[in-house]
Length: 95
Image (cartoon, helix red, strand yellow):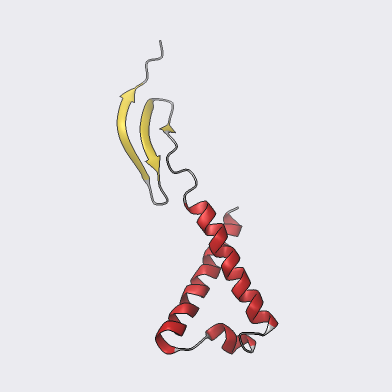
């Protein structure tokens, strides 16, 4: 799964750079490399970037809102993409 995530992020970076070049300089790097916007290879790259965006969007919020628990403490908080935000922390009685 880590490999798929790395591929998706790499394709999103390629797509972002390409869109930046289009926006700032009216230059489509993917079409310049692969022979135009309608070339088969260009369309494959555009399609893979789109699929990567959909994949990453579905994984972006996975785990958000689930309670975080460990063996010693009951920690209520939320997982985010960047870190774990802990709220109230209480001791669990083993009685």
